[in-house]
Image 1 (cartoon, rainbow, N blue to C red):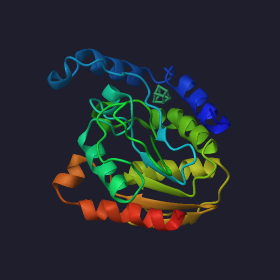
Image 2 (cartoon, helix red, strand yellow):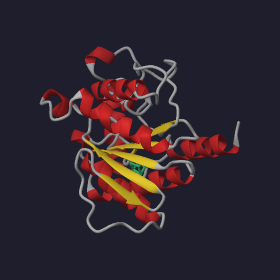
Image 3 (cartoon, protein in one colour):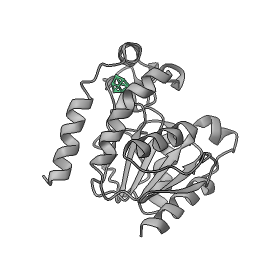
Image 4 (cartoon, rainbow, N blue to C red):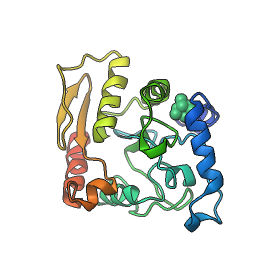
Length: 228
Ligand code: SF4
């Protein structure tokens, strides 16, 4: 295994044992015990969900947190839920993924030049981590970015991912421009990185057509232009 992959695996092994946030530990484990009826026969992951993808990624995608019955069930970010259906289809269409489907670890999905992660690593109730939980968890994403030295573009899914990415980049010592505001298609240069804003592919956004498939694909097409 290449040294970078080994370091990411070491970080992952530490992350999955994290129990720093009492409320989130209780919630992720309760959801894993109670389960949704449709998944009653499955064993839920019920732990912090690590990022995944290509260790030589040039593009990093940052979401909010694992979904209770999505990544908290499958153990892989955006896997097994509707947001992931949209995300991986767009990544496949723009050449960052070998397939559009993401149903479970071991489904054959491989990312090329992309790494998918979240600002908070445990599923929060109502998808709303507290400020303290957000601040407690940020060290994991900060460590992750350090182990992805080829990343040049950061795609932030939603305002939470945007603010989190700004904080992580500031922690890495990069000077931020004044008040870089989140919007879909926003593009900001920060040190060696380009930060791109993208509406989160949540059902709230896709059902209302606030985010359409061409809009999502457009952000990754722009990211592809920037990295290739
Ligand atoms: Fe640990 Fe982050 Fe999960 Fe809190 S949210 S328990 S810091 S992994």
